[in-house]
Image 1 (cartoon, rainbow, N blue to C red):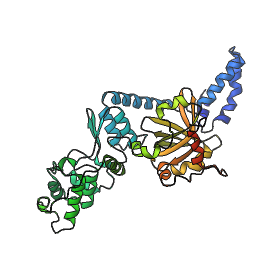
Image 2 (image 1 turned 135 degrees about the vertical axis):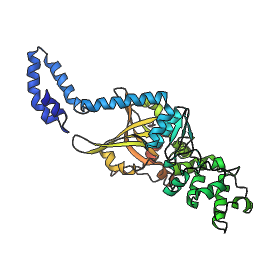
Image 3 (image 1 turned 90 degrees about the vertical axis):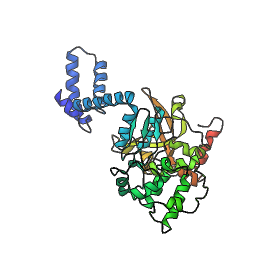
Length: 381
């Protein structure tokens, strides 16, 4: 028994286990078991080698899982904010923000008075921390967190007492962190004032905002531009899923939602989503492949890239995307997954809509023409 346990722990246990097959069969026959049952049970032992690990490790895992489930159910804001404060977990940060919104939590933008370095939350809200603001300098973060500095009462007060650089101020304004002290000014107006101050002799003058020339009537950014700026600076959007930014680009494709996968088992379909996690593995022949999870705004899509597709297309999965996936929906033991046949970056589809060759060498039919069959009666969706 201990020998079988050691064999199971090996990376390639088949040969080591083969030595025990005869001994196992002889012992089972001596106990009166029939050949069919012996063969079935031994096959189960061999299959267990693919996912078994030590009892202590599994006990630790289930303890963490149980604690996490309890916190998620009873203290969702604190749980999600703690995961984000830790930089995320198994998935990318945007996936936890999307899940928080699906749970009914409000995601609040960074704020010069209310935010900390780390993300925090309570009741039904999560406040994004400065940790996610791309381009904000370490000196800027220290200035905002300096004891006694907050609260800042106005833009002028923030500019003088924090001694933030112009670049840091522009970043905070664009991400919405200064909205609470804007005193009625739009973000374009605040940026105009900061730029005007930079080009005058009134640099850091506490009276500059009241003495500078009249601020032009610059309208607030559109919701789309605000969200795209948030996505650029944070890596996610506080009031929408990032996939909403690509609705127009994806309208010309007949995509299947993650919530509709069960209705298309066995079909070759198009799906779109953001990459949340990826796990490269090796086949029994030591060929690289990958399991990847995507989020389409409605839920998660579990996918597999077998060796041929992995070699040809995995190099484009270097960030969270989004991506357009072509693959076959399959179901096994109640789990519905997508076996990826090809994958494209949505931003590349926007710039080169008519030159999309298939990844397999030697194929002449463009992916665009091939995909167009989705719009024809009898064609794949």
